[in-house]
Length: 184
Image (cartoon, rainbow, N blue to C red; front, side, top):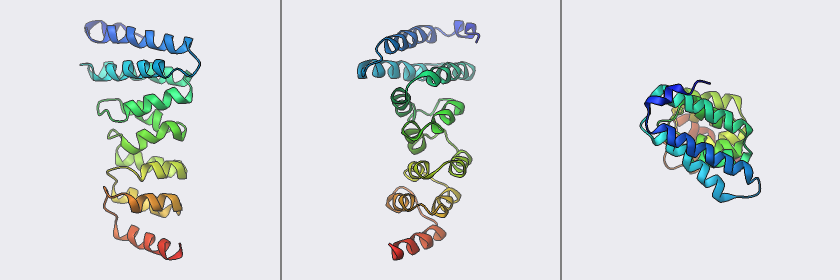
């Protein structure tokens, strides 16, 4: 991986050093070290909040995906939670986290504005109930995604959808949910 492209970006080099130092600290402290996880997650968020261009963001995404492949679930979950609210992170990184195990994927599925309707629909089609339930908590869902979630037949997803006051259910979804409520 060629990191020479970061030479023209004065903000990135110190942030990469901080990321490396934080990752090294976390690797040394394999026990339950919330401070190390917090420091590493702040370093990652700082990288994406820096004034960097699209190519630099893509290189950072490569670095972070490689880091996350070796990281334990708890660290990936912390990073997912921190990155879920950022609008300027590469879609590849968001999709990587959204397709991880559900404890890692949930923040991305619930909060990330980087995921498009098409991404959400793909995840609904390719994943199971826990992923559907996380998606049902989103503040914005397309009509097609709502109908697909209702068609899943998962009772937990139906309950979450019916309690989500930030979305507007389709007539089709209301009919299906009404039928579920009568049976329940």
